Length: 99
Picture 1 (cartoon, rainbow, N blue to C red):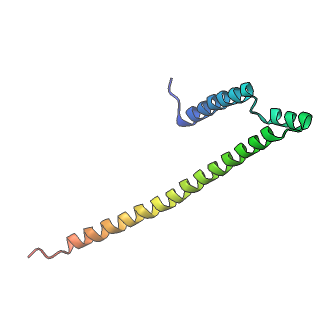
Picture 2: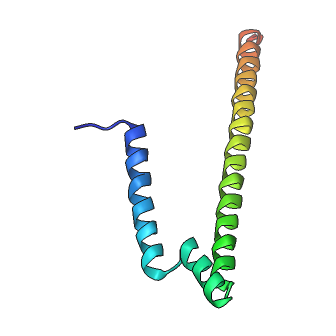
Picture 3: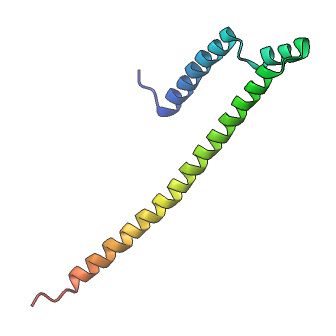
């Protein structure tokens, strides 16, 4: 049975999500536990920690997306520059006087 990359990515995301979700549930590091502690006991440390973790995850994913977009733009211009250099060197070689 062969799987295409989309199926592999979906299954990997499912497995990673299940593992992280079960670890979060077993350790009590989930939003419901944080809100329960905040509402029942007035202790907002876990809710603030969870919010900080979500904020860092969002910022990191957006930064990674930005880096990938910038890399794609830079790589495109790098390829175009390489083609221009190759064309110029090829033309220079064709018109080079070998005498």
